[in-house]
View (tube, rainbow, N blue to C red):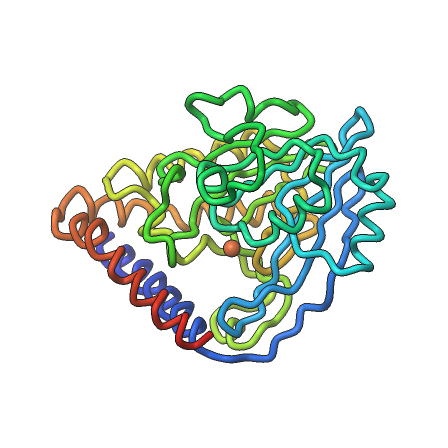
Amino acid sequence: MRFIINVSLLKYVTLKFACFIFHFTCLNADIGGNQLRTLENGFWNVRVPFRMVGVEIGTHMSIIRLQNGRFLIIDTVAMNDELKHEFNQLTSNGSNIEAVVAVHPFHTLAYSAFHKLYPNVKYYGTPRHLRKISEIHWAGQLDADENKELLSKWAPEVELRIPDGAEYYNPRPEAINHFVSVFVYHSKSKTLHVDDTLIYIETSIWPINLLLQPGSLIFHPSLIIGLKPDAEAPLQFHKWMNQILKDWNIENLCTAHVGVKVGGAQSAIQKLVNDSEVLFQGISELHSRSRLFSFLVDKFSEPFGQIVEYLSAIIS
Ligand SMILES: [Fe+2]
């Protein structure tokens, strides 16, 4: 058991180290220009280029047509003229937008520009969005405590859920802890929109392909610090993932980085969750057996994040 846990943790640490290195490597990876991808049954996923310190990892926005004919926008992206034209045609120049929902605390860059284009729309966001983007008059905060009803505002058509076991209100360190995001499930298209928590490698991107081939699905490398630093958190998150797989019939998966899986998403996520069980148990055991481990995760992730932020700024 201990050997299995160590191998699993070793693989995780290797992956995390590689992802850390990727941040400091200038690369030429092209995943195409702005694209409006139709997944049928009223779901569109917009793919746009986005570089993380030289690495083209892409990002996304989803458009969901509700049964009332209006459109729910999940995340925002910087739109070029062609995409803007398509978007305006679809949404009648934005007049048919039901709401914009910001689901990842650290996906914030495109909101100001999007808000200038569509200022008369209701915007909902994570606590960090509300703290950081003051020019938007937010209609509500997505959270599972005081605003739980907001998560089911468009249910059963569209369900929003926040992972258990992960810090959501104020994820730290900001430079590297991008693990948590609100999961959005559209039942008619059987599509799950999720940002950094899950990463689906749709195409081959060097040097990511040194570790992950197209078709790979992983949790975000900041998983250890994204989960709360206690023995219960990894098990809570694992249980939460299994619950969404019971509740939702997920055929398609749209992840911000690096792509879309059309068909077969349920089994792919289930396999990831099953394969990761030993990792979650291992992290939990480390927290319960070693105060030093909890101390290191809690106290040293912040200075580590600051070092990453500093080096990223130099490279950029
Ligand atoms: Fe991200």
